[in-house]
Length: 384
Image (cartoon, rainbow, N blue to C red; front, side, top):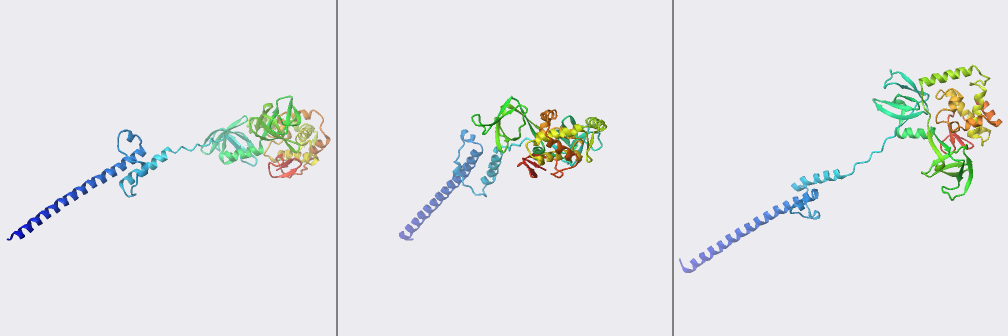
């Protein structure tokens, strides 16, 4: 073999050896890069762990910023950590505050609802809850509610009761805000501040027609066609709704009414009453609508008599007028004062005609200041 050929093979061997060494270096380098990629993925896991538990950094574990975490949705990191983040976020959300439920309950009947000693249709009847009557919830179970309405305590079927917003809405319509003046002279001002002008100074036995309790300091009231304001410091507020009757109270009332009928001095046909009842109704008419015309007088009298006839209220004029929470002048003592004084003839005439069956408001059983309810408007009142 010539020297040149030998030299060629030697050079080829050197080149081949160099290529093999370079290949080994490339593989080694590739191996280092693969190891680096694994460490990078491991660092991502640590970075997400830091989001879930920031104390990992304090323990000296490596991490990356939250913003630098970019992982495929198919990667193990995404599968394992994303649900954990969601759970963590859900755990930190504040629990919703539940509104306290009202303990008010109202009867939802046309006439009257039986109240029983125990929760069941076969239990002993202890009283009646009439239309527009309400009370306080004491206990609820199995579709029955134990309630207190005045001196009546017992169980009523939920099917005939209203709760929550429905009960509050009805109470607002049929209840009355009783306002007692607790000073010798109460100033009705033109604005809710002590520097405002004065419409009138009311005496202690005068009656207030409340529009709204504005805050802890002032109450808006009706004064003629104007809105006046009185300081709540000098009045006492008490909201009344009609109460149920116990069986004992019903028997006592019926006995008294039977005895009264034996002493009748007048019979107007539709309802049998005595002279005292006529005067009592006239006194209420004066208190409720004394500043109104005769139509307003008759309308108030008709409402009372409609209740007497309805079966949903006490069946006497006295019982209706003095029912708890119904007629403010009766509850604050004004009717009693008017009864013993001079009552205008127009009020007496309206009482007599209403007792005889006359009505200009149909079968209405309620009235309030005009503007607060739909109905028949007569003077300053709306009747429904």
